[in-house]
Length: 247
Ligand SMILES: [Zn+2]
Image 1 (tube, rainbow, N blue to C red):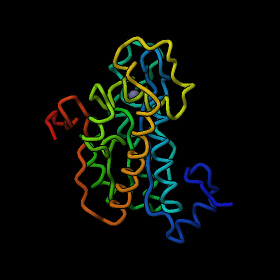
Image 2: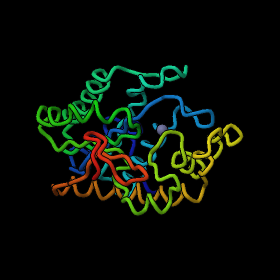
Image 3: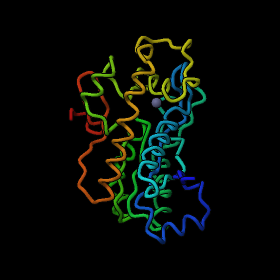
């Protein structure tokens, strides 16, 4: 039976130690996301499921060279606290917590870490700290959202509203309809934009994300210079999430 395991928690300490000793593990992924309101029709764990899914599937394609850490499932969601049930942490707590997770991996001997994000609210806080964290850890450390790997043409072809990731919108509704339709309460959709979502669009968007994360990991491990801004997609095109400028 082939060994498809990639989640660090699924290994014994002996198995992990032996893989590290043999030089098998080239990089780690730390998924980060949120537990927050996703409109009336999607589950609050949505972003975390997505970041974890992309991490797991990208790691499997590069098995046994990539390990996936336990996801950081509560992020910076202060902007949604009016919708009860949302869980949030302060930006500095989020960043420091993620740093400590990365530091643990560095102490295990990991030299390449991709923090793979699935929630927009985490981007600005972490981008303010990432250079400092890279210096402190003295390794190849990157922070990207999984949608950063999309090209604008694909987004414009597939998303009628031109937005990605949006929030509980066409994109997120589509991808969840593909991955786990029971997590989409279709009858509760209350806006036109989310109603544009369908399974086919979701299917079309999942594979390029996994493939993009695979390439990103390969480039990280081989030491290539990577120019991949943290972005959001709007009907006008790709926009840098930190500077607010077009890319
Ligand atoms: Zn979301």
